[in-house]
Amino acid sequence: MAYTRKDVSTLTPGERRRFVDALLGLKRRGEYDEFVRMHIEYYVADGERGLRTAHMAPSFLPWHRQFLLELERALQRLDPSVTVPYWDWTRDRGTTSVPWTPDLLGGNGRRSDRQVTTGPFAYAAGNWRLNENVSDVRFLTRDLGRARDPIALPTRSDVETALKDPVYDAAPWDSTVSKGFRNKLEGWGAGRGSVSWRNHNRVHRWVGGVMVGGASVNDPVFWLHHAYVDLLWSRWQARHRNHRYLPAAPLGQGDAQRGRVVARHQAMPPWSVTPDQLEDHGRFYRYG
Picture 1 (cartoon, one colour):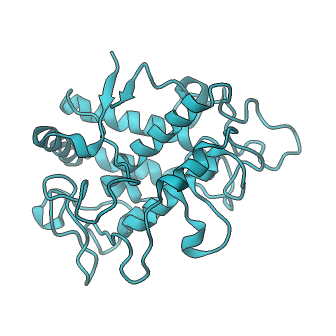
Picture 2 (picture 1 turned 180 degrees about the horizontal axis):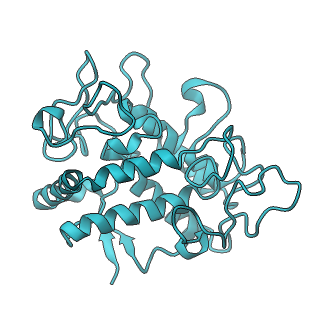
């Protein structure tokens, strides 16, 4: 039976507590860091060699859909009532509103070193030590809105620009493509700096701290952010029912992206699941 992923702003105090407790439970067991390591491993950029599945590629959306499902299943092994909530960053845009509350994810990092000092994931609480892709800094960091070089969260208009494109993705199937829903949502744009970060990418930059880069899973807000990205994909699917994941078939000989991107019926490492198998999430969950 399908369960419901809720808007984080609608969670009851009890639901907030159970979600946080399940995350902390995974961390204590060492399982949470496995998700951090996986995301780092599959964060392959355009300029690198080999297959790209998680980012800068058509499979960005189904790969993260499966990634979320894996995390959700791990949480539910600890507490079957827990689901991953989504953060609608087009509406909840403040630095002290949800999800940045003391009983949920805690707040912004302090000015001196961006260390998060409030909430259950603060280093001082003793339950959230960063172990992956860190050097001497073991605490969670955030720079909400980027104090020194302010950046705004994406708007509903920004999201609409992506949603109205009926084509899922297009050649050259990477971060440079200007057509297609996937990259308009993933958010790789032309130019440098803040003007080039859109939608999904801009949110990572707005949160700042460890949310910038492959180790972004170190901040639990990663999951709430990607749950909303996944919801937006489901809205695109509902709006454009005659359009599906592209490329539909493996790319031809001579194509520079052959062997570098996943076609509709090809498996997405590290799993055996294909984009085709993940297009319909209704058998797993729905959005409330």
